[in-house]
Length: 227
Image (cartoon, rainbow, N blue to C red; front, side, top):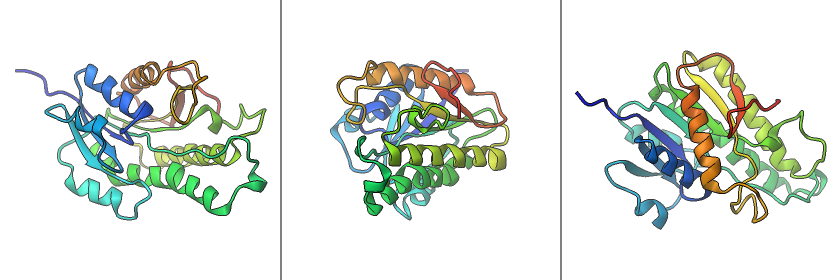
């Protein structure tokens, strides 16, 4: 009897690393649920037996619960990739309050609301993850810059660690640093392509399956990142 393929939900998969991550899981024979805020051609052309699209705005009050209501079956992996960035050169004292709150809403609060809404679909042995950043590391911040963005990713890290302690169970909980990637966020000078980063993120998430314990903060090569 053929083994049932594994399944993953990637929240925020319409472009960049999220889209490349959906492709990386597809290349490994996984079924993928890929979410997007608005329908996009990139996901529409991939939709079919192996990839299902769903609409999700992580900042929407009702979005995560509505997505949970339409999902059926289990997820072997849940990964929240959705995120936004601010001006890298603007110190926190010059940031507009609404911009700072938006970063926190999407990158931290919204991401955790998706995890809270969907994590019961992931059984023991599965993996629950979110896209953090090396810029979320307190230990590595020796240059400043990206201050509001750094704060939002550090908040995400803290809340995911709390989630793992409270509700992780026999599942791996992973924060991912994708590296410096050539996307709209990373810019054209970044050394990694979205595909290179996503293949590493995919392999790291799959490698974490079957483990449990405190949340881990890993890069796209599977190496530990200091909190």
